[in-house]
Length: 100
Image (cartoon, rainbow, N blue to C red; front, side, top):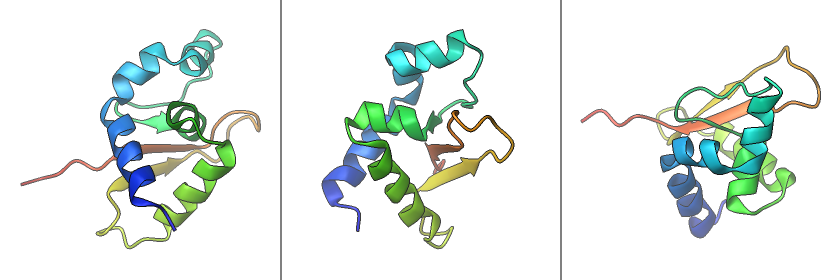
């Protein structure tokens, strides 16, 4: 189960995804080798783990939990790339846009 604190931290980090991608050393290095597959507003699973200061395994489990939710109830969009180098992140997450 995802704790409320972890959930809130994820939301805060994803709200600042653009800034984090510019400043996080992992993201900078992935862009330098042309390996970043993030779209605007997204973070890859590895960048999310680094930004939250948790393990990659913790983020993997979090994403699996959110993938199981009904799409209407899930506050996140999770995109998966299948055909990518094994050492590169495959999952990308962003906040869903809220339409009033």
